[in-house]
Image 1 (tube, rainbow, N blue to C red):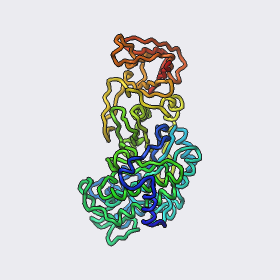
Image 2: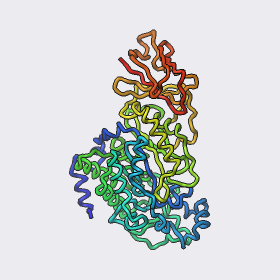
Image 3: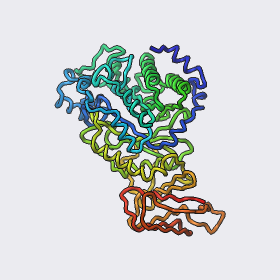
Image 4: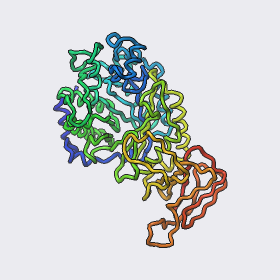
Length: 487
C-alpha cells in the first residue's frame, strides 16, 4: 500500500509540482478536444431503491423528505433496515460490460465516465482501503475494472469520477434519530464520519474536514489512479471547500506526473472554481455558455431532468433536446458529457437505449460536423437567447429554423439548423454578401453546399440577406446540418 511519502515523492518529481503555478502549465489532452461527446454513468448502491434520485442515502435519513417516508413504508424502520442493507440486494445479475460498451459506441460516444464512488461511500471498484466495495460485497466483481476492459476494447477512452468529498457530511442526518448510523464510528466504517451537514456548503463551512478524513480522501483517489489509470478524473462539487486545497494540489501533481510516466495525457474535470483556472478542465453542470469561449470546457447533464441515477419516475428529455445541447456546446468550444443511469440489476433501461441509439443514428449522418471540429468566428445566429451558467435547464428552449450554430473543419463550414424548416428553406444570414468591403460580413468564396443525409433536390443562392438554401423535400424532426465547402 502506498505511503504519504511516496505520494509526495511522485507529486514533486516533476514536471509538475503541487502548486498552482506549476499545475497551471497543464495542457488539455489533444484527444479530448476532438471527441466532443462522452457518457457519464451513475450506477451504484442508490440504484437499488431507485427512488427520486441518487441522493437517497442522505435523504432517507431526513424526516421531512419523501425518501424517509418511502423508506419506512417500503423497508421498515431505519434502525432495522439502514442504507447498508441494500448491499446484499445489489447483485448486478444483468450487468454485461461488453453490451454496455457496444451500446455506447453505437451512440457515437468517444469516452465514458463510470462513477467510481458516490457520496454514499460505496466503492464500485476493488480497494484495499475499505471493505465496502463491489468486490467484497454485493455483486462480488470489479465493476470498474470490467468496464475499463470493455470500453478500451472498442476504443472508448476510459475515465472515472470520485464524489467522495461530500461523504464528510452526507450520512450525518442519520445521527439525529434512532437509526443504524450512530457513534462511535471509526475510519473504515461504511458511514464514517457522518458529520453534521452544514447549513450551506460554502468554502469555509463547519465542521471543517479533519486531516484524517482529507488523507483518507487522498489515499482513496491515489489508489483509484494507480490501479485503473483513467485518462480523465472528474470531481464533484464539494471539492472546492478550502480544506481540500492543499491535498487537491498534491493529488493533481501526482496524477499528472503519473500520466507522463504512463505515456498517456490525463486531466482533471472540476466545478465551482475548485482548482485554479488553467490547471484542469472547466466543468459546468446542467448548463452552458452563451458564447464561444477562448478556453476548452465541458458540460455534464443527464438524460433525465430529475435524477442522475435510474428511478421509476424519470422525466426523460427528448432526443432533439439532447442534440440541441450537443450542438450548442460544441459550437462554443466544449464537450457534452451525457449521463445515463442503469437499473440496480445492471440492465440499461429501454428508454435510455432508445435515446442513445437515436443519437448514434443522427451522429452517423451528421457527426462530421461535430467530431474534430472547431468553433467558427461566431458561434451562431438566430432569435433564441441562451444564458450562461449552471443549472439552466428548467426552461427548455423552443428553437426556430432561424437558430443556427456553426463549426468548422478542414475546408468546410457546418451550419446546424436547430429546428428543421417546414418549407425546406434555410437562410444563413452570417454568409450575406456585403456591399461595403469595410464591414465584417463574410467575404469567402463558396464552392459547394449540401445538406448532410439529404438526397432530394437542392439549390442555393447568395445575396445581401444571406445564403439561401432550397431543399423542398427536406423533412426532419431533428436538427439538420448544412455543409458549406469553401474555395
